[in-house]
Image 1 (cartoon, rainbow, N blue to C red):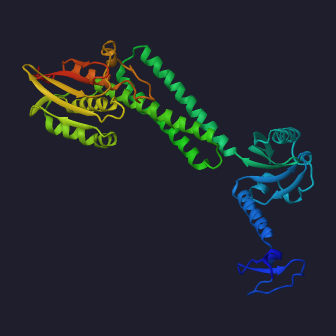
Image 2: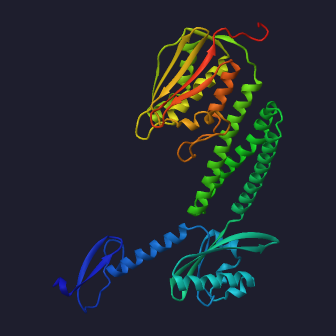
Image 3: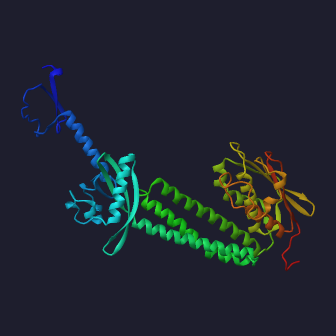
Length: 417
């Protein structure tokens, strides 16, 4: 038998292909335990139909084939259909007007027309009453042919409720921010800020961040890329605001917490600081060297730890692109005081900005370039002032920077003075 004149016959259960002469009558052939046979084109068609069915089944929501005249042509079985419309099995042949209120029918027909004209997926939302309750739905209309579309309806009521709750929390946070600005502008005592930051600001921020992350994780499959980006912005904004609150709280604690002067073993103190920064140092590829150190100084341990933490972090943060950060720390004896120096090989600071950088909230770079709150160096200045010293920076743009501060040797507690 010539294969050019033969027709291939594929037996589904055996996976074998047989040939027969063209125009001959195909006899029923039993191979193994099956009598079913498919030609190769039929096999491909079956696979294509199975693939399309699997894709539709995987998509969430109630799915319908609808004509351009607004007639239900087919309902694709899913658990969401009965929740969407009861008696969906009898919808075939019915008009949209017999099933939906007029305003929903008009919206569907309008978007069917747009989809047919543009060939693009049309998305819109609508409210639909059911059992005395309003449900929020998202509809997607996708063109199948010039006269048919696939319509998918998703219940997004929970997402909308979550968004409303998130909006309320954002409004609450906005109000707290206004109260905080009014509080700072009116020059009230900063001591009270610790309570405000720890109770009135931190909790709403935590709630917003957690709520947004929960929304993203729970409904990621139902949200488009734009919605996920918006949620990411909320999480990022809440995190930045939380960092600001934490730094403000640290700044207020410098003023309010006990300022006891104690003997400090400088080597142990710096070891503790560098252990705390170990992850950041490894992540950035920085190298921190400690040179000359006195065995002991007299200062407040908590505040000195914060001082070195901020200065070293600042030196690493403002590094040059593609250049590993090198930080050198030293403490030299200058008679009545110690001079602390933290030198780096970073981007440097122009002369006109070298005093401004110690001001509250003063930032020379955007968050996109160098994230921060603009409080780190202000905290350092406050700590040094409490230790009756001075702080300044020596730098040229592009040539790195050396942050210097002085620390009196004979510091004593107030009751000892």
